[in-house]
Length: 199
Image 1 (cartoon, rainbow, N blue to C red):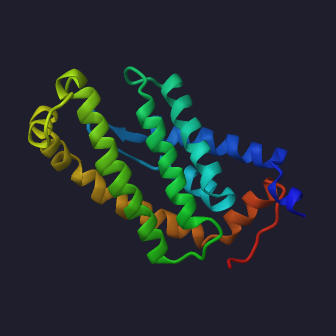
Image 2 (image 1 turned 135 degrees about the horizontal axis):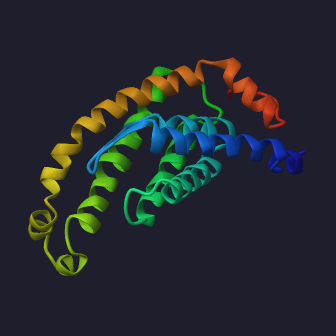
């Protein structure tokens, strides 16, 4: 029974490929992209993957979506740091959403954790260090000099609107997805599994 439960099925791979494709389209094509912020529904595919398959599979889905999107729709030099933070989004969603009941609080906590730690803090830090300053200059810099060299305060202030918008958007969409048994049952049937009651 354990073997069957842990086996990766052809259906799961098919659904995951579809979710990766949706992630690329929603993130790279149907989204508002600026040098400092990104607003869109790319997280939706990752959230569904998290609900169906758990944190590790969702992390893989998000990472592949970011990598393929960067290759097909490049907006500059590829930077693996954003692929890692994309994977972290999948991991966070999986920890909060996998086989959990659809509740506003859970959806809000998943969205808040992701938007705060990944979008606002980690991604802003990556933008500041690798695109707005020279890493060589930062070597040995104290905290005050680091803030001055990277314009971290200004970047954080500029990205707060994205944090607010995406937290609200992710909360609403995740809750609707969790409250849609038809959608989740459809994905489970395509993945060759049966829907399970939440513990």
